[in-house]
Image 1 (cartoon, rainbow, N blue to C red):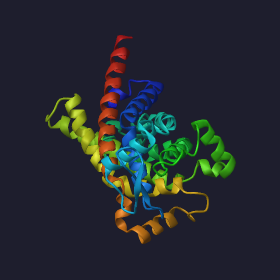
Image 2: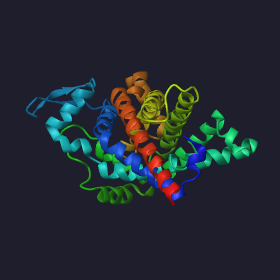
Image 3: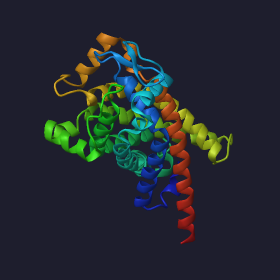
Image 4: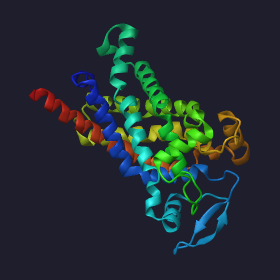
Length: 315
């Protein structure tokens, strides 16, 4: 990201651009996210339902089908709309999450750069400064927007063919608050903070560094090909780094009250019952989604920045 150009924009424009770009990316990739969640919760002491081509139940099995089979089962049994279950909460989540973790990244990076060496221009290039900024904005986003993530996961995570727990997003917020208390809405905050700190570092910092590397060595100009290349690399890094904590987060958020003693208990029981590979369940849809999501996000966000700069220059 170009620090000097970014500082020309008002804060509200940074927040709005980041949130809007993330919502557009979520609209494009939400079915993959739903498939990822379904694959992540598979194996929680219950068999996996399979569907025939006409939508009837073909039987059950304990091994997780692949991405295409999972998506096909959801469509045949529940209809294509089910792939977008929880979309409203997902968009609320992105508008809150991304506006903070991405929109505030450059500002926080400048603050840390000034604290470390008093020179924003050189300090902002430090990897440690970028990592600290990514972890900070990722944690801030979770603390504010955790309830939206809980509701999104609850909508997405159910056995194929089973009815949704809630009829609407508002009902979900209300029911969780009444039945589980405020703690229910912030359930899984600790693993989600861990996940988003990792995701922010892997996603934003990797994109930042890779884009800068490409531009400084003149491999590509600052345009869409450069943004796509950096986005794909950032998506791969994010998937590899964040999958284990993402699976634990999903399992814990989706669990019934008292099912797990805590996040550590959830992780230990996964390891004991399903082995280390359980922490990478849903890796294929997660990788596919994150790469696709990053491409759409960064291209959209970079275009917003270009448009905002033109508007700012014309004033």
